[in-house]
Length: 88
Image 1 (cartoon, helix red, strand yellow):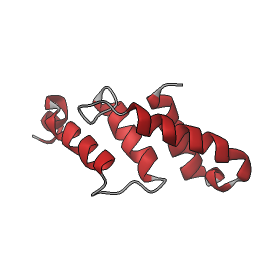
Image 2 (tube, helix red, strand yellow):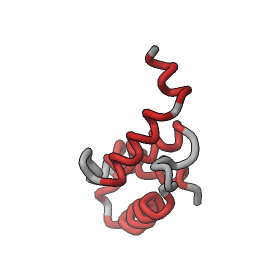
Image 3 (cartoon, helix red, strand yellow):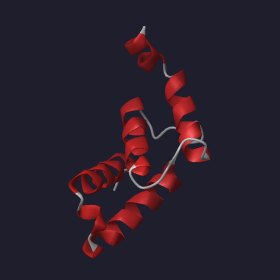
């Protein structure tokens, strides 16, 4: 499983409401740990899209601004030239 796939699973389970089912607890746990463990040293998870999806997935399960994982990822996204170009 890649970080992008894990993030997509978290987002889908959170949006569908299925994350609350006991049968999904193992998948949620594995996806969360995979994302926390695979964050790059630069704060991202590969490309900007994967990083944004990881932030959304982790945010669906309690990650908030002020926590190092979130803050590092946001800093990473703000450094990506292509992302800044979207807003200029």
